[in-house]
Length: 422
Image (cartoon, rainbow, N blue to C red; front, side, top):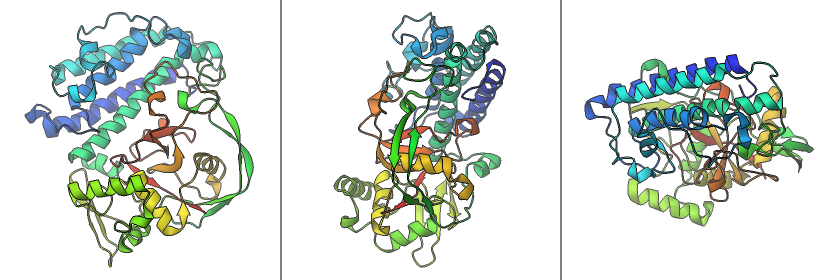
């Protein structure tokens, strides 16, 4: 979809909106009687705010953006046209409404918000239909379609955020969704040896205006610009660390051995232990050291996890401590990307859980912020990189060049990790 033309994009945008509304219906079943009230948690938004924000983002960058045809070269601060909803910016502009204030807004009800989503999508599709179909694959077409692609991927990301929040809140899901949002067992393979090479890291896409090469399709700004990196030979796990492997770390006192943790990680752990009495990954109710059984709360229901499922919901600190205990290390970002591209036929499996890597989130050489300036730049230097995707990521979002990012203490994401030999 990064290089999709007008017609496939139109279908994908409709699919994304249907998915958003379908996921929100799960919240409706659980929370409508309580007026969608949820606790004020740092990584959760009020559901009605999340719903309206999806429509606001699309309208802001497409229908209200007089420079949308310029793609990544548009001026982000350019004055916008008026919204079809007079209160849109006051309610849903994340730059004007900090997270803590979203619980005190006079947000509209579900029917009003759903109508806004349908109206903004109709406007988007009308404008998309008027873009020139000719010249697909050129810099001009990439410019014209840039914000449609960005809005599609943004909505897919917010869809995953709705799934993640449902897990955090313990909301029950329809059986089909619960099954879809459960990682499959893995066929465990030996580690893979990846030979030394020079790897072209990052993306050439981006419509030219934010460090990209015109005509190369869409890229997020933090993937730009592509650059050569010399990579020595390394050995990397073929799949993420499994529950069976992680239980061994817990059984060997991994959560009580300060020498396995970085100082900031140990402080994070002590804070978690003081608040929750926790000695295991998030949402885990029980770890049987002798039996190897792991009981993890999945969307409000305790489930026994299989030993060959990927371990998940651990912070970067926990992933790093496990590697120290095992005498291994987290992969560098370039190692993960190289293996994902070159070792798939030899068994390198990714896409079931997001994966922490050892690298901090920093700009590539030649980085220039895209129009959505709040996306990457404010997180450089403070966040760690997550690579891959999860079972809750839409298939069109899964790309081995994609760079996720989160603070090292974050563990509500559907995240795990793999390791490399020292």
